[in-house]
Length: 412
Image (cartoon, rainbow, N blue to C red):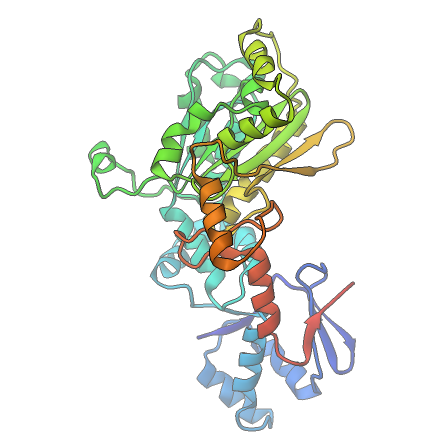
């Protein structure tokens, strides 16, 4: 291990014996008491020295025996320490690709703030290269979203859509103006390749057809049709429900951006649950949807460029959170924001007993086993099929419990 105080956190001394790591309250921590010698020793935790060499440096500074190991353990348990050579074989391979790692350096710094174990951040970043994500829809939202995931290091981002690129599909970071008139899916895939920091090994047609080829880690449904954004068709995700593939909805409808729900088949509410929920609340809902779907095609939909880009960015962030092994707040909820107020709010999507997805039945079983109340959008169930995944609240509690005496959250 080559310990390194996380460089993403700026450091400042609150007084002679208390040091604060970080500025933003979400991630800032204070550490104390810290004597002068220990404060000087912190400068040596820059990832260039192993523990053996650090112990020698500690003896030269007249630090007590065992003090270096205790300090390293204390910083690691507080989530302030990284390992400059950790993360496993995939991380080592990423470090060898210097240009790629330099492009992803800001992403790595961000991951270091949301992971607690030394070497965990670069391990997560390297693991993205093995992931497969599909984006269904290549309009202003879908194409930008796909490019963002590719640029963030996701190894395979496949885009599916039909038709030709129209002038209204063009967006910075998505489909370029020169793609107008080309096949929409082909143009979007080129945009994805341009955004990628690295070219992962090409998946051949033969390899993709093999039974052992892993399925998509996530499918993102980003329709260009505004009705499909507002009232997602359950049948459009039947194959995903049947195969147990997690999927996330995103789009813009009438100057309103939508992100979610993130559907974990059989565990959280899906498009069918949403349809049943709305029908319960308003019996005329199916009639309205039928009229909207069969109405005359509009020349242009109200899809503001900045709002579409905002939705794409937030959806990509939710996707990366899920792919990293945590449940974002879109699990079981739709986040919506409308122009001009731009105030985000969440609408829960409950599992519905009339929906054949089975989420409601499983929810009843879990409540019976655990003696718990209904799951809400604020507290979705963990996805047992993802190794190491726990809800963010649980992770927060674990981190707090592991924090040693003398470290505490900074409220600045």
